[in-house]
Image 1: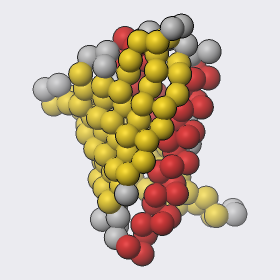
Image 2 (image 1 turned 45 degrees about the vertical axis):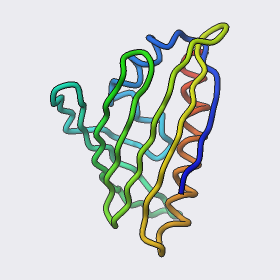
Image 3 (image 1 turned 90 degrees about the vertical axis):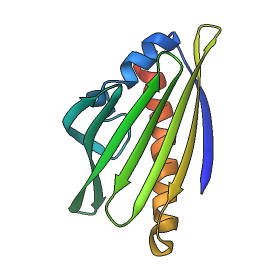
Length: 140
């Protein structure tokens, strides 16, 4: 399943890129991400574990996902996610100069086993929408 979102940010692409290249900035940027740990650089790539927290009433479940980030400075960041249950996600954020800041386009591809697919795609769409809102807020 693939989908895309586009939004504007009141900051130049270099500033947005620098923000997105720091894994610690993803806490709260993606609505489910509550922690980032095990950050390591391997060449130009950055690997880390993001902890997603799913809530159901008073209960919660923490889902550790492995993320590998690559980038083209000031233009593009690709995040490849490996999650338990056979879930894989690739998100490509493209940054382009725009009047007053940047235009951000995020293309997301989700692969998941059929019993999880509907849930995973819904959560990925929520995450992309939340990321757009929060990133715009951070640079407002």
